[in-house]
Amino acid sequence: MTILVTGATGRVGRHVVDQLVNRGADVRVLTRDPGKADFPSSVDVARGDLLDIDSVRAAFAGIRTLFLLNAVSGDEFTQAIITLNLAREAGIERVVYLSVFEADEAVNVPHFAVKYGAERMLEAMGFSATILRPTYFIDNEAMVKDVIVQHGIYPMPIGSKGLAMVDARDIAEVATIELIRRDAAAGKLPIETINIVGPDTLTGEDIAAIWSDVLGRSIAYGGDDPSGFEQNMARFMPRWMAYEMRLMAERYVSHGMIPKPGDRSRVAALLGRPLHSYRDAAQTLAAA
Image (cartoon, rainbow, N blue to C red):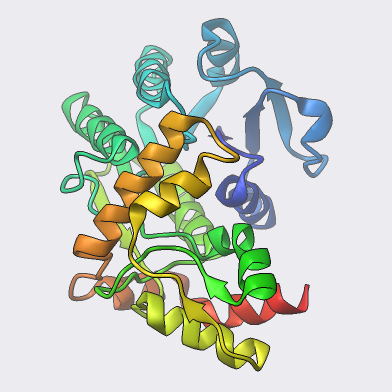
């Protein structure tokens, strides 16, 4: 049987496809534009998207295990509900779902609340699922690199509680391990939730200090003002999304993303290697 990967052209999904191929799995991806996908020749590419019912039904034919990743969008919850209903209709029980850290607590942040709703749906509908709850992506820092380098400011308002930022490669590898484990299981496995965290819990000041070391000059932390962050985001994304990013930043400032006891050791044990660090990512970005 085959594993279907949604969100396959994104930061996590692309790594999931590569990891599955490297481990000898049969892989199909669902993508809007196969011509731009550029996947290995062994990957079966299905055209469509999660709101195109016919394309999803066609993509689900012959699938046993699903990697479900819904991008942040105004209809994210609709996509998740439809996809899980169509999966059940197709007889697919084995799912690895990409949620978010503390999805059940930050219910005022739209894409957190959406993901918690999907988690509840997986449980209520009796899926055999692994729910992955990653923290803030280190890879997001590529979007603010120019501000850091050109203006000497780290602009993300992440506060003083700290975020255990995680590398997309670590998320993808855990997802791959769980996809293969569930796909190979003789029967239905219970639902499990895994917090995927990075090796260090960093504050805004900590991150500014790392960039100062990497660049060899002083980088300042821009402060904890989510309203200013919202205004900046609104320059290049829809207004509703910029507001959602503000709500997320407010959560970072008020609560952080702090690993629970055992989270780091569990992820490191699954991977069998150290977790990728923020400092390494900053050095790579600076050299690019």
